[in-house]
Length: 66
Image (tube, rainbow, N blue to C red; front, side):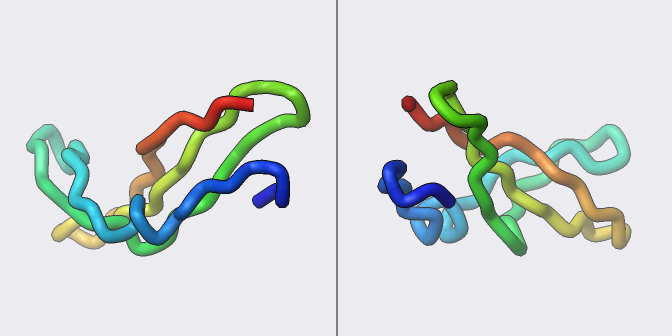
């Protein structure tokens, strides 16, 4: 995370999100959360989720303004 972008990732990690696993929507908490932002452009917060069937899925869970 860049120092000029004050984003509290712990807030994103505590929430549950709707994630599609095998065609069904499931509410899951992310295992890991990080930011993805090119310099001078809008960024996103990415969450890594573990589905009940064992699959791992990445999903955008938030937006960051430059």
